Image (tube, helix red, strand yellow):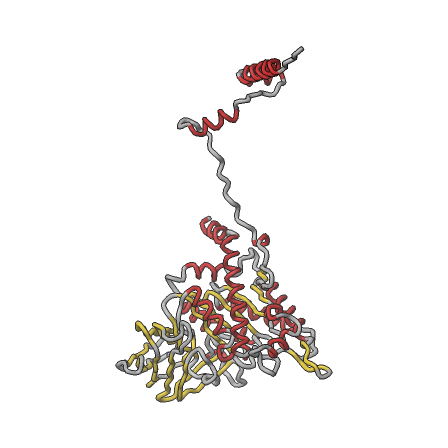
Length: 459
């Protein structure tokens, strides 16, 4: 006997489907009273047709990504990121916002340091990388005289007829010192000449800004590009720091002769009207802590003219002794220095770079001085106490024995004093610091810190 059950299967399926369809039309109120879950086998079809209908109110919810927390963005492998000790974790916010508006005005960095950055080593390469990325021209603020003028590669510099005082001089008048820790007084017929060099963004500039203080009228003569017509200028007397801009489309070189008047010159800034400007304020032998003695009034007046966005501090070589591991005194002094600079540059972010690796001979071999890690920790602690940003240069170099590797590199990246960088080493570390800035800027943009700051401002 042939038993065909296919018909029975269709009957059962049809019956169940009919029952389910019927249940779908039972109102929710009835199913709720009965304690039965509402069944609607056509729910997916109804939803799709409703979503395509012009009268439907249903909308696919739009999920906006929440701003990331900075802690959620890890430091890339091999990179030494900044330690931000500011209260809100946005210790470079002013600098990063200024970069966003670089097409409207200059973004200015004061790079204070000792002989480690003398001759524009390290600092000059950081400037080049930043200007290539964010725009800007010129070598920034240059002093009228320099004992490394023939050594520096980022500007050609000649001068004559000057007297000067410096923060590291024994018989200096601190009250007269300017932003770079020195002051220059011209003798009769003193002069200075700056020329561009064949390095990216340094061949020419559009503005030379004289920063000075003169309580009586003073006169000077300047000539642009040697063949230009000399122009005589009378500078008005002023009780405070003043600025005089010499502007041209393209300045390849400029000579300024100081003809008369009692004038204190603090520097001449070679720059563009927009983009990044980096001023190298190196003082050989400076410990860094002595910056707290610079006159607040003069520095604040200078800042009102130049508008610094970031202060970078690089010190430590001149306070280390080989086996000393207690730098509590230096931590205290650097804390006072950062607090003083914050008063002098109220709109600027402040960042401190640790001392780099330094080697000494022990049992016939070069090893890292025991003082180095101890001083690094003291510098980091000073930043933690003041809410400044810290960058561990020692670790970025490679940590223990990294100076030995830099001296032995091909070509060498450091001098055989196992203390100072050469130009190769300056470029190497300058690029590392630049890439760290770029990463931290992207992280700042991603975390929504800008939006948080603007919201608070609008309240």
